[in-house]
Image (cartoon, rainbow, N blue to C red; front, side, top):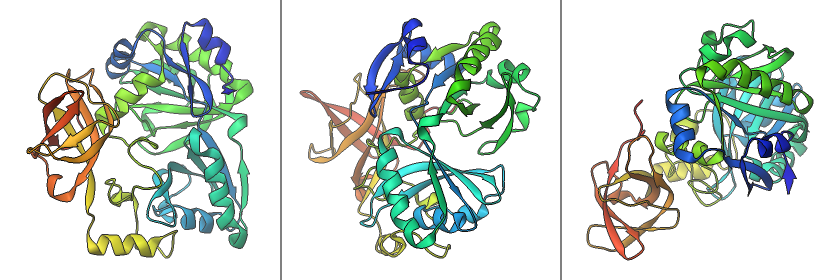
Length: 362
């Protein structure tokens, strides 16, 4: 089990630590609902240093990024970021990720912790012919996500950069919390605004303490992975391993918007084009329970006649809405908003309906 740099600090703060993606991670401090509300209404800070970071550099960097990702990285200017996915050769997804263009010929890929080794091998395989310079810097860097509507105001004193000027999916390399060069980005996973700080492991304790000090008057609290999950689910953001994996197509998962067929070539482009042409047979949908209950991953999704048509991929009791919400794949004929379905929760088939995302409108 790996540990993140601030492991002991989280333990001292009373965090409940659990194994997650091969790391010991803080899942909660005070409880999911309290932490969730802190981010929705104020400001919270997550330590998500388990995430992986790869640098792709040199004259062939863009060619490699374009080959392994589905989105069009040629559209990125320095200071811009892009949500993307890495398709596999058989129609599924190796991982979803964020691509940052750090310099003219330098790209930073931020990948899921559970997939670091797999992603690295996948990229390296395609780099044999392309010949970009690739570096796995995952073990050297830490990542803090400062999220919530008060994040900008609470953190402005820690940097000379106007934090309001960092628009969604852009970033700057600047001073923060007394560290001269960190990445400050706005690619949040909560739907409540804020930004992320990438810094070296030896810098993260100083950053963490200054963030908590600066945010004290705004009610900042450390937030665990459990609230991160309820926050992202209220927005309908996919979680790798739950809603997308090696067997789910980007088109089925509603990620057609990051699958750019206009670009020259990427892994399994032809296969995905064929799927688009023929039409998908199942789709990831969002649903809300009408009855009182909590949908969980793996629970059967039934049609109105009681036939099993799919399974829940992510589900929770929404702290913001006070009702059960979830995602799951169903046949395309059951996938339109307003369709009535049922979720099998133990012995009960709970009534639910398919809705448009996001669940939480802010």
